[in-house]
Image (cartoon, rainbow, N blue to C red; front, side):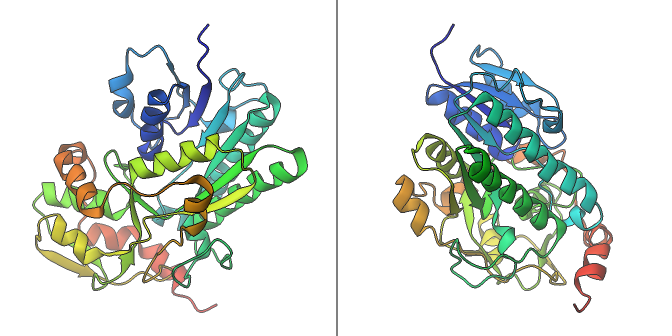
Amino acid sequence: MSSRPIAVITGGAGFIGSHAVDLALDQGYRVHVIDNLTGGRLENLAHHRNNQDLVFEQRDVRTMAADDAMVRGASCILHFAGIGDIVPSIERPAEYMAVNVQGTVAVLEAARHARVEKLVYAASSSCYGLAAVPTTEDHPIAPQYPYALSKYQGEEACLHWHRVYGLPVNVIRIFNAYGTRSRTSGAYGAVFGVFLRQKLGGQPFTVVGDGTQKRDFLYVTDVAAAFLAAARTTLTGRIWNLGASSPQPVNRLVELLGNGPVVHLPKRPGEPDCTWADTTRIRADLGWSPQVSFEEGVGRVLADIDYWKDAPLWTPERIADATRTWFAMLSRES
């Protein structure tokens, strides 16, 4: 029996999760991955195919039992599993609550009964809503759409299990992660995947608004490093913002991707003009800092652009159809 500690990574075949698998294996863990492959892809783990320190099970985290065999004896759990596409949540709120909240509760119960040393929850900066920037962890919570609400309620469940049951948890509110292996699902999703497929298809970039809106993009390997650090620290019950603290305009992304033709789409209600993580706390507590510049990160993504060749190609017409309910619901005055 190997003496290497076990890290359970839910959603470990997905975008961030698969990079966390890479890092955990490199740092001496045996890794147990649970992923239903709705958003994840086995291709993301193919380079570990013959690694005996990696165990994979394809299933929904909601099936996890209190005495789940995949969690038995685990040192830590990194919980990334959930529905990550934001726009479809406006039409499927019950599904998002079921997966992102009840799925998290199932993971918490498995962690509690296994007496894991640490559970780190992948929360979302969307909980802040239309926030003042730079945004600190004590900013008021104001979810604008069901995805944001579901991720925040998952976070609240984690902190409740910490307070009531003494489960050692930490929460990381991710701002705008990007990088290789980002989602290529059928849903209208994150800007990188949309733009990369448009570039491959010779189609214009569909820029929402005038492109001056800024996002706090953080490269995925820097995200994975923060999660491993949060699993290893003796600190518990902490909430950390995670971003590069260097917001980049969407127009800058277009420029780095090659300055192709652009089509401007209406600005979406409920979305901020700028996301900007105040990362003072995570830098001080974990000694973490980003290592990959935006320019370097975009370069890495472009070098792997063929990954997106089978992703959906989003045209202005398809985007208008996919966001129709979003505009109808979130444009209404409260």
